Length: 260
Image (cartoon, rainbow, N blue to C red):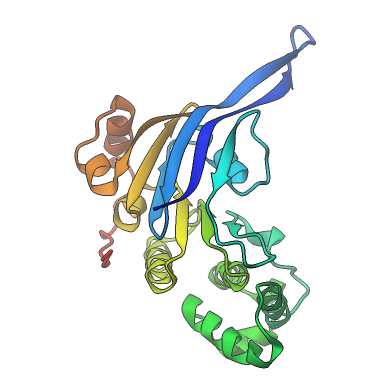
């Protein structure tokens, strides 16, 4: 069952030509159409500059497309935004001077939690992202990098989104942390049924995490399909290039976790 559809999405920006002094259009996205399925994890892969993050912002409503439209098929019982974005850098999600507990409580109330159930819901939320109660009394600036990302994830989950977009969630992490976060996302997906869209250039992670994959090149989709098909029998030369280029990256232990 589809949960969100992109229909002929294009996006362009105006840039100034330093030689002529005239404004010109730069095409960032070109005629993107795709249907995301409810309850699965879809990966969006491609090199830097391929348009992945711009597309994520359009999906979340942070940018409006120049052409085309985004159609959502959501259960709109909550007043909260049902599509949430976990940024690569989470300074916009967590206030460094507020206590983590206060920020998460606030988000739960926005998501419709009743005050008498707040403590129980906080404990469930902390358990789902691998944090303990001691974390609640700490301020944003007191959290480590991994704790900061888990706290930001908890705050987003608190408003009960139906779609969670992950923008390069594994960047600047060591291999062990990447493995733990990939497992965390998969557990949340299995436990809650939340639809996830994971944007990453790390194909080693995506091949183990996602159910379906969209490959982007210069603002267009060049290939899409199941994770097994795309990674085992790629049909487009650019996908083959990405997979071959992957073999030249620094090697680390293969990630193995249950996707069933």
